Image 1 (cartoon, helix red, strand yellow):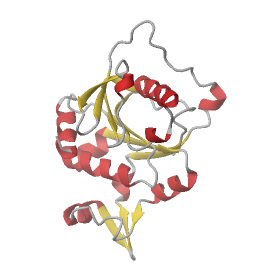
Image 2 (image 1 turned 135 degrees about the vertical axis):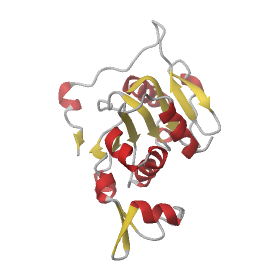
Image 3 (image 1 turned 90 degrees about the vertical axis):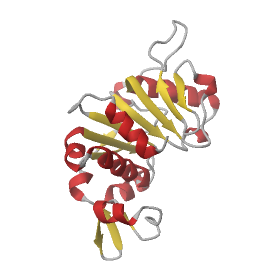
Image 4 (image 1 turned 180 degrees about the horizontal axis):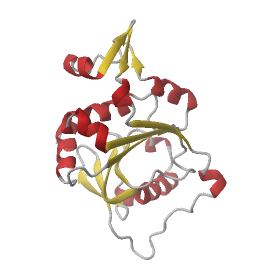
Length: 209
């Protein structure tokens, strides 16, 4: 199941015109975020993308976020992007390729610590690739519990190649292990603990925009 086919199948199970919320946690300098935007736009068309989709992109690194917000990349950065997509989604400004401003409005950037800050809510798809690997098992469990709280009942989690969550199958169950796609477990047992709620002051530190 390719990412392109996954995005189309994802929209197939959503009622027409219903908003779609995507969260890229640990977005770094933004390449993943703009890839998601292109995939969803290709799946439903540019007009529907602008109308229905909102992508929240967060990271703890302010410098990386500043770069991601610009959405500007050089030829080497976009080397793996097909020429047709580069033409459709990027505008050339000097020696840089800038993601289209009209589509950029569907993306909201903000600083967030996945271990401490309140998660984005009512998310349909949560992408967190090659971030959990930097945390120990206990911290991973806390983050995954927060991710579960973030997702809608049938929400999906997409992890990186080096990340599997066999110890947390009470929180997520595998949908496609080859591509590291998991789905939120609808109901937790009474003894399955959830992380502590962040304090109001801590939650308020998340800056979105």
